Image (cartoon, rainbow, N blue to C red; front, side, top):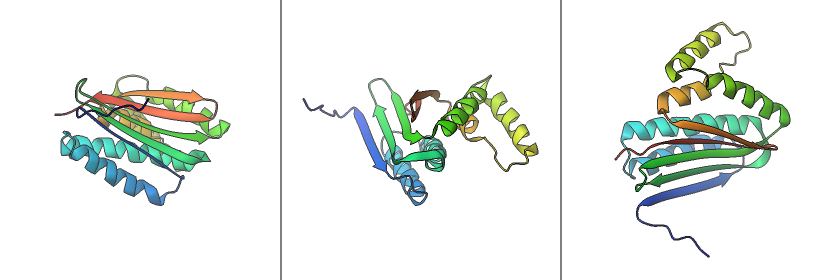
Amino acid sequence: MEETVKDDVGYIEMKFGPRWKYIAVVRSFIQNFLAVNASTLARADKIAMAVSELLENAVKYASGEETTVAVRLDRLSKSLTVSVANEASPEAVKGLKDNWDIAMQGEPLEAYIKRMQEAAVRTDSKSQLGLVRIRYETGADMKLDVQGNQVKITLVSELDE
């Protein structure tokens, strides 16, 4: 049975190989999709930034040939859901889980400031700011789902009308 898409729902899903050159294109497409679907430009920019950050990590740590991005706008529940999924190595999954645990501690602004302070003194040229930045700047509820080597990060927030 085929699902019928109603006027109160906007939905896109893109799948592509983990290539750096696609990130800017996908970010721009999602930003425009959100801008024409009842979201403020500022909100569209923040969500597009989050998608770009998540895609950079998905490409950087991918062990498979498919990265998936999905965006769903639901006007009835006034929610915006964005997810990025890919396959990653066991080492990358462990690193993500460790980073996730740190990023989700405390209030979003405090976690972001703390991570920026840590990044300022790191000597390995890794900032580890992506998740805390997304959490703070989007204000979205964030969920990490790991099934074996499949990793999916989902953001859910209120839809600006």
